[in-house]
Image 1: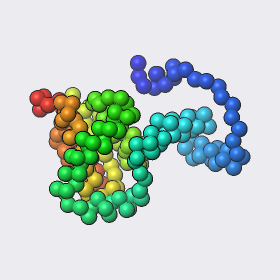
Image 2 (image 1 turned 90 degrees about the vertical axis):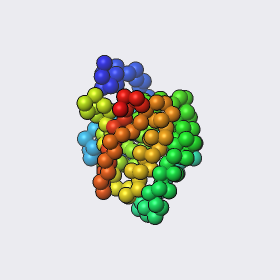
Image 3 (image 1 turned 45 degrees about the horizontal axis):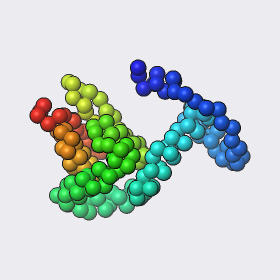
Length: 184
């Protein structure tokens, strides 16, 4: 069964709520812009709030302007970024995975990474190439951000017997493959 089929079969409830007229107008405008129904939009908004924004706020995640983040990350050497990645993966990232999912496995790591990318408007694509899971990212978060991400991924993946390999970096994107250690 595909994810879309599961979504269709998902149990739903009818809920009637009252909202401010100005907010209602803004929601309807957004529906027209995105070419989706009001029901779909509200479900997306509520899902993000309950399953992402609330939880990340509880865990101490902070929002920052892209330009500020880019300046900070790019003002640090690549070696220092990789060291930060290693320490934050084994503390912050692991704690986040346990808090959000209750466990650390490949699916939870990839789901958190995908949600993290999507919440910051970073383009995320996952595919299977020659039997290997490949992650492709398009971003505007600076030259060092990919090293932070791949470093974090490797540190946490190594703990569960996986590794990121074949990393490719360019100015606006990067990619890597995930393999089980020993299958390389």
